[in-house]
Length: 505
Image (tube, rainbow, N blue to C red; front, side):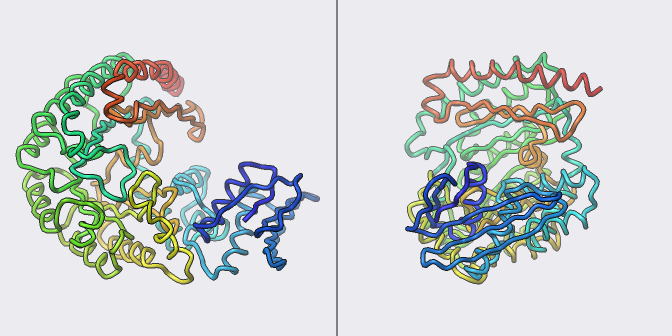
């Protein structure tokens, strides 16, 4: 399919709309000055303003010669041009395919931020929901989910201060690589010998970073140790990392320290002793599914019962919050099997449950079967994964609240990932990073430092500067001087943050 426009941004936005309906479709950019192609379907766009009225039209010319047209007259433009034209294209494709997309024309990662801006601008929640449904064509269910998530997380977002930050610690090692994983993580079968030196280098980076930030009047609000699987480290290595953090950062204002003990087969009593002793108060124990055949298919080296045993062991340590992750849409999983998994996890009564919709990333092993996975998305009616996600949300909302929500490029059916929490057990870090509420300082291979620079006078006026750590553990170890040099580049950015904080006062 060709989209005819001279605007690269318009092409990109409308191509995303097409992919909602036809994820396997090849979409090409055709400039208006070029001869119209006749070897594929073509989308033509038109917008004209006359007497303060904007007339918009989208025409789909099929290769057969058939034409389908949607048009509208907009008197009071509240949304951007690509949304106006995107709605018209959506209507054409919805009628042509017989499908509806639950998130309508919203293709971005952070729909909750849109709801937040609307609230700050003076709209109440019923008005925001109506706007999502009418202007973005979002389903009532998803609009309500978005608005509810914003309502639940707003106090935590507001607790983020202009000179606040969170620390992310990257441990890019796992017992084995899951087929759906696209993170920079290495199986310890191949990389075990790197771990001791990696830990030494990362602790050196933690010390160096702590010293750089000490004079900047910054306030650490949360710590998140992720990966990979941090509990791939042994107990002594875990102690070394967490003690280095404790010795080099002021944790007096730190609300939570999270460790992703994501793989049950890495959880042992000696590691949990260390985590408890050193102040970790939130831990993830992730199964992804409780179907043993699916676990084997995706490359997890544990059974459903081993997950339950690990969860019960963690429960004995009385961490403030335990999180469990599930993924809807995994290969060989079925709706009934997913229902069984979510119901069993809820019965365990964790404080957090996060449900992810399967995302097919190029770097994941599962991407080799991408076409087969996405073919189901082109069928009419409700797909298996949509049924899974809808059921999980209906069930979880009975005893939990949605506290953070995000979407990813490549997610099947353009669905979403949602964290559910019992009251007062929300993960602050997850909210901070998804809302981009404050800066994230990352240490370790593959980490990305994001410095959020907010205007002292306008809450909506922010920019984000990113500093990328060296990606792979062997690069990180062999070019460690470069890793430290990247930390030096934070200082000028944090000087701006500090000056803005002074002006705000």
